Image (cartoon, rainbow, N blue to C red; front, side, top):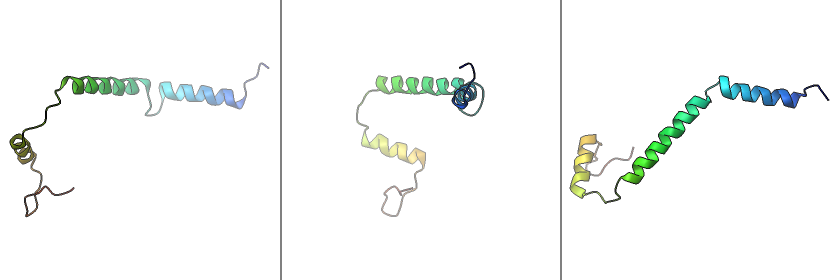
Length: 76
């Protein structure tokens, strides 16, 4: 009754691993969650207006997307 079984040690090891080791650290996870929330709020604040075709072409030219002979953007 007082001894710890293998399952108790597995749970303890998993908790220790989450808090202190590996790539899955609580601070990293919470930072990623905060970035996601900020991006979500930014997306909500931006208007959903369609882009002007002339501005879209200018943006494509600035990004230097390679075009084929017909003038269409190549699929990457």
